[in-house]
Amino acid sequence: MEIKFLLGEELILSTKYVKLIRKKDFDKIIIKKEDIKSANLQFAEISKQYLIIRVTFKGLKDFKNDYFFNVSDILLKTKEISLTGVLDDPLGIYNQGYIDNFKLLTDKKEKIKWYELNDKQKYFYLRGCCLLSGVRENIDNMNPVIIIDLSKVKTDLDVYYEIGKAFFKSYGYFGTEFHSFRDCLISIYESIKMREQTPLLRIKGYMNFEKRFSDNILFNDFYEEFTKSGFEIQNSK
Image (cartoon, rainbow, N blue to C red):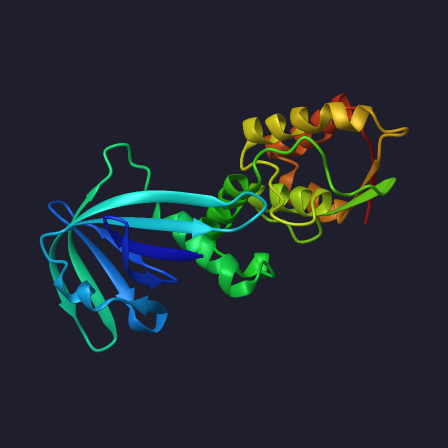
């Protein structure tokens, strides 16, 4: 991930991460000096200026968004830079969760430890995967038997993550709730039908899945939706 601060089209600072804090009457951007990649001397003189904040992340699809920040004050500290002003974002496009997720992916080089993440990180990881790869029409796994490991799942997001992980090589998105899960399943339906044989889904850790989800509507939806799409399911301990 790279975040550029532009004055017009002139690059004045490039950093790996920013933290936006929303207040009632103003906004504040915190930039750790250890995250700064390059800086122009003009950066110290940007008070009362209108900046473009350009966030880019390269994945299967490149993510790029511009945000606009009207700087009222700048404070240079020993370990960080603080910008006070107003984020011009009437549609609410900026979301710190996605920025945090892209930093997580950058730092871990995709090799995250899913079950060490909190629920908020898990949600934004999956939504970030959707931004980067979209809802796909083909799955990467060409094996006749696809193993979905549900031996550690505790929450709905864990289940959607494990499906995406089983189907795709990277940025595996298969929903964050029932409707997006069904949309993903509908999206791959035609490509699955074109195979000589529909893959068998082997559910590893079925006992854990049943124990934790038997009273959850996701348990029945999981089997019903996959079966309606032509998949045969085999449960395994």
